[in-house]
Image 1: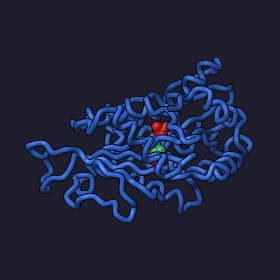
Image 2: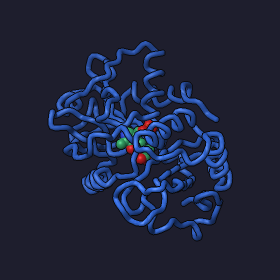
Image 3: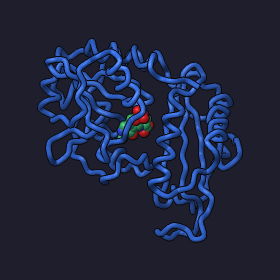
Length: 285
Ligand code: PDD
């Protein structure tokens, strides 16, 4: 766990880090977050994560708590103080502290900011990528603005728990149209038998993953066949490969969906190559 956290202007020990019980994040999940990968002590694709943060805040009419330059200093400082070389940095911004009332506080209150950083075991992640993971499918039951990276994650929590209880590491949401939207904390991809890479277009039905965006650059640069469109569970089951993307998992091969093996049941060649390739297209700062 993060030893040092940034909480509203101060770097504090975790044992002393706390938020007000009237914080609207705690009361209403009225806030947004970002998770950025840390690699070799540097932030991966910070610029894109900050762009998405600004978009999420704007959509919810929460003020940017400080300049992006100041925020960048805080993110790097939390990484440094926790001596994280490889891991993630977590940033949360909520609408602030006010007496409990569903409507926005009037007058406005300053947003609350929390930043933590945690190490991830790179060796373990690579071993997992070498084996591939199992995924289950669950009915899509989230609101229709999941493009906003809101901290309201109860459906995602329940889906992930269901996956865990069924021996899988991720749950893919399936809409009423039978099409996969995304995972509970990742974007979903398949490679069809004729070699097309397919992932859902980034509309309001999915979070526009930063890893997804960077991987699209890699796929286009390599001249691979790409289709940004929804795919069905049946298509995924018949696919040659499947994988998911997120800041903490990069490109993670999926080898089983609802207990059925995908392709030959081992991580796909393209998924594995794209995992390696990702680093060439991401920015570090
Ligand atoms: N999850 N879709 C959902 C619902 C997510 O929560 C995430 C990220 C993604 C992938 O986005 P990105 O590539 O920018 O990480 C897609 C983060 C890692 C989390 O909740 O921990």
